[in-house]
Image (cartoon, rainbow, N blue to C red; front, side, top):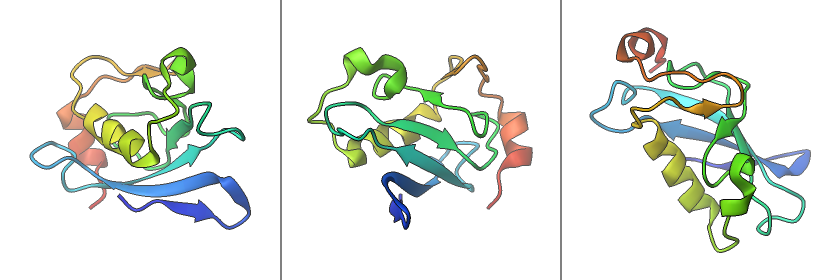
Length: 117
């Protein structure tokens, strides 16, 4: 994981996330954007992926227990590192992801063709 602050926005963090080892995503590197709330860490970040993976829709907010979709579950003690680790683990979830009004299943056949090593 390689997070990097955007030059023009201190609340926008770009990252590259390597797919989990031993998964259909392991050869991929996925670019995404983590948007921090102005009063972070007291409010959760939101996250979108820019790289097609077959797991998440691109340019759509990802629903995690640690994201803006479930702000009531957010804990200010959670770090960006913890958030990124949980995001990477979410690639392996078998259930449908809660991508804002656009759930995507975890189809290895789709991810194989979309992964960009």
